[in-house]
Image (cartoon, rainbow, N blue to C red):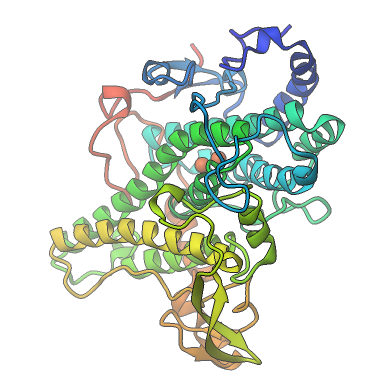
Length: 473
Ligand SMILES: [Fe+2]
Ligand SMILES: [Fe+2]
């Protein structure tokens, strides 16, 4: 029997028999999926000091406890409703928002929810081998915190599917547990979620850049006229912020350690000889994960994006900061690829909504990179700066896919690209090196692998050498 104790929620689960039954049916399959595809080697004998959301108010966030991962209490939370909320953009602007799914938008809404939902278990699958290579117990705990919250995000989407999409929704909820990251027969829907994440630099880059795509998407879905979708995603955003904190500070600590090693050696030694991760390797990983995440925002010109906006399904990030919410006669001036050549053209703004969201995303990423550069400055590194590559570089989706550009956006021939791509993207040798320094996990409280600096502070005001993950007593 499902109780609100077992599934913390603010959707009156105990009064909703239909939903309860649907979830009772789904939950055991979810737990089986978690045991099969969740963190490998940390299911049965480890207790993790995690945060569990028990309500949506600030106190509901302060609940920390040791749990065995499969016993985590995955809950269902919606942000509090806004009184008399109205459609905030598009052709239906000003009408009351929807508490049920309008028949004519059923398919696109289901597709949006399933696509978002699919990324959540996918990332858990991608990251499942990282525990046995962890740089510290602090980082191990953060990895698991991110993983259980991605699991909760899956619950959030499954809640919507079960509550508002009937039989189709139930089928989709099952399929979310059947697809597998990287599986050739049943892959996850989006390509960036089929790449395995085998080292911690990739993990931190993923949580910096790909979780930030999650933030873009959630911000735009939180504008949705489907009120339960808006409220669900608004609450998810509060968790997403922590994922990006893990990513940004994780990379920052690797940069900091590289700087310390450089400084100690009088800037003369190769950082790799000292067991650190050199700045050019970090830049290559920025290039890779930033561009994979740009792809997640979809094609530059998109009629789907235009109709999502027109119909009020998906808005712009922070819609209220724009003046014009109808966007009927605005244009977007865009660099386009036409007949193999770069050109500039004016596109109706509604058709450019993916690009508008991508602009927001690039700006948000740039602030993080700026903070990393401040760190270089602080350590007196003068001849190196991190940067985001041009958005045409290394693209697999959109009009630049299939063409080659360098990180400055200059076109390259196939031959030049093949010859030089290892200068810009992680090579097999880089991966081999990263694997070599991460081969031995660090499980001693307060100790950190040589390639990463300790964090500024611990979790929940606890010391850095707290035992954040312990074997069962
Ligand atoms: Fe998520
Ligand atoms: Fe996330």
